[in-house]
Length: 348
Image (cartoon, rainbow, N blue to C red; front, side, top):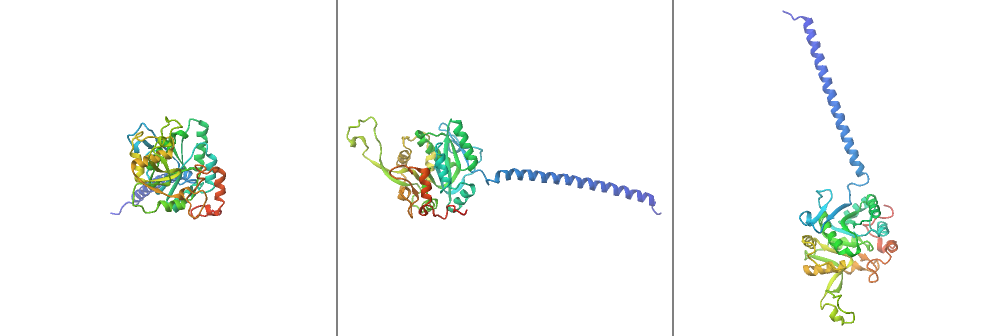
């Protein structure tokens, strides 16, 4: 018996209406979900781009160093933010600076130290060396505020949680090496002052040399007495004032320690080694006690730019350039100083 056409039509219409409505609802849900995904993706991308328009990632980092806390994170070093992965480089160069050295940093950024993120990145790629300014803290709020603005503008600092004072340079130096070891997986760690003219390309070649000693103390060496006794009278014979032994230690403006040496420093308990008033003597005495290999290189203490000079400063007149803000620019104007494949050209 044939089916009733009305019933058939009615069922077909209902089925079509039901499936059509369901399809529309599914399509609407899909469109809403897709719109939400797109909106979320754009929001996240914009947030990321807001941080990466100027920099790919932050370069400056704060490092806490507490002499009384030695239980975790590289014997007291705490990198703010947590989970910081050590950056692999051949050498890390920490340019020691202070709150009164704004003009020096300005001159450096106009000469051999790149003033922008891309320049620092290119220099690292060309030489295998990472460069950062290293500074402590102060209770002076205006100075800290000015530093914060400079960090925001240039993003090229390692900030140590230690008081920035000339009398505490040995403590700052130890804090620097510990922080550098925590932040960078490096073959050499270089301490340099902000008043020397440096050739990064030549420093890279020096650090890349093959060495038979894994524990190396590299610098422009000078001889100094093991000890002096301030209680002795000035008129007593010199032989009774100075120690009988003399030891080589590097001039303070620039020297480098290999990774094994810095690892040993990191493992030291604070206050386990004596701190002297001079930072270079302090490190030199520790190197003597650790029996490391001393590598003397006079190219790290040249008074003038030459075809082989690595670091130029006014030895022996000044521990650095005597008038660094002006002399830095004068040296850079000389092709013998500045003509380097790793330094930015006028066209860059």
